[in-house]
Length: 200
Image (cartoon, rainbow, N blue to C red; front, side):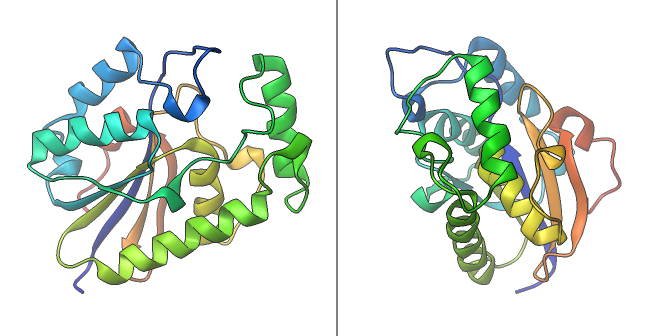
């Protein structure tokens, strides 16, 4: 394959509904508006493939960008967020405590959540598989903050930790060079990526 850029975009804001399983949550109006505003952004112009997790919010974000660029997103469940089905929805303070524990003890299953080491392993398997198949142009992955942070840490050679997590609100991007996955930049709000030089 020729050189290009891998960009990982976390889905933006969602509609929180405790009655619906978290993987089936949809984008909120704010989140949908942010994705629509990105359509036509220069940093998306060289994208030739879009991948998404199987979760509704990521699929919706990928579909918006795909429709604008004429690219049909490919779904890969290995890119799904941390499996938190053991607890399902929990109020924000409890969620934050569990997320802290998830990163602090990567081999442990915080209250039954999928272990960080397992999330990172499947995420990196998916990443390597798709990078190997990528042809010309840039590759966009639309996913989630947790698994996205773990993949970024692996790519950047960082010890996993919440200090490397995405900005609040999601809709953030990190980037690496293709095909060697040399880091280009860590999480940044997608709206700010447009200010970076071409190739970032």
